[in-house]
Image (cartoon, rainbow, N blue to C red; front, side, top):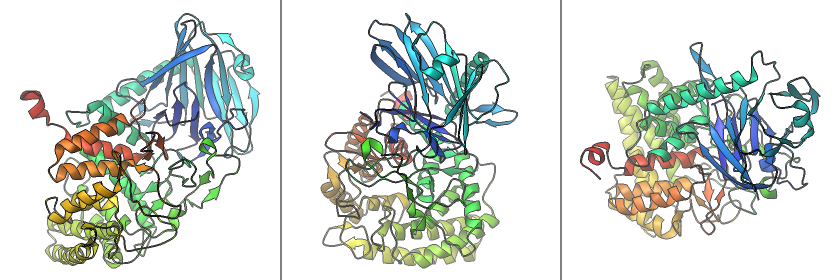
Length: 599
């Protein structure tokens, strides 16, 4: 049965998902938001045809094991047959420094090696084009197969017997073979040398990247895997960060909560760069700020949309794709996202929070200056104006609008951070202007967001529904963690939104009914809130629970079923990996306390 026990490989330009038996089930080309030429994840194999897949079928399959090479994005799958013969499949997407720049081609390399005895294998390569609707024509060369349609061409170059691959013939694996899948271009070098050298250089790149992360003392492997995953969800060419690598994995079974997450939400991207900044990986933030500059330059009135394409001016019209039945048949499959048409006022605060570090972090080669501050002021004015206007909120309700507490609080954060930036720049009059604006917003928000009935801050100003997003109020600084109102809020959220050990976003009915799965990031928010109000033991216990909910290679999707423990929602979800990093950084013993004083 299809599930989300998948590994991810990529290079910040393209990414692929591979299941536990080494089957390539998802790969979009020519970039992260492109045509899913390997789309078996959303085909459900309803016809028994297993199209949109690439795999190595071992005859008399017995078992498989999968893991990453240490501190890398190189995935290794070991498959054993019933006689004890075994092969190893090494999958990676090349990424390394070359000619003073990063080499990140739209290419995937598979190295298949015998490691014990002699397995009989069958190689299948079945791409589908135009969102699963077109089976490409094939043309064969001496060492390659071309897959061609009127809109796309893909080439496999290999030292395996071409006829065996093309006809999916069973043959004994007597020696290592290599599959190089990528653009329709000739490979002007030895296949073996390219595959081996690219693997070595890609491994060296990731080891070097991880070496400079400022990881916490505890849970280092979990944090490193989460950080690499976030890196793979960035589109380095423009600085965009996608919310996930997939589209239309439903948030729960038997639901139409299916969305395309292969785009850049300004809010989500802020959370990602915040997490990577804490680890010292600041280049993603610099790239995101370049992206934001491009985005904001296209809006002379200062308005922002909540989500943009990884190329900012791309249209995101939402359409349904009939050729793909969906994950386990739970359609529809959607391309594009109508959230781009929504009003979500927290975007302004998210952008300013992301940019603020440029004015305070002296590690950065490019510091924030007056010109950047003036651009941010335009966003701040929109935040101030819109703070008490209804919007769709961060959960992107499609059937209603409210004055959401989180959106208003992020508008306050925009003004508050502008005041701090102005002070650093020596702009006293602007600092006072933004301080006064923030003070006015804060008073009104805290008064209207508090519900005496609930004894809690609530989802919307003047409302009564509970919402996990109010747990961020102390995180952004609009209320102190020791404020009795915030402590009461944490208690109320835990009482009413927890199901077992997991936290729901909210429990009230939305556009699709009452939610049935827990939102992973909200559980991490709750963990952070517990730690902030002085309940670290409870927070650590719940954090360990969340670590146990990751899949076999340490990844999380968007949601968890509290009854079955199964992962649901788009995958891998940047929100969830961010939550893991932030909670680990907050809860871990310090290096000094653990290493020097013993633990």
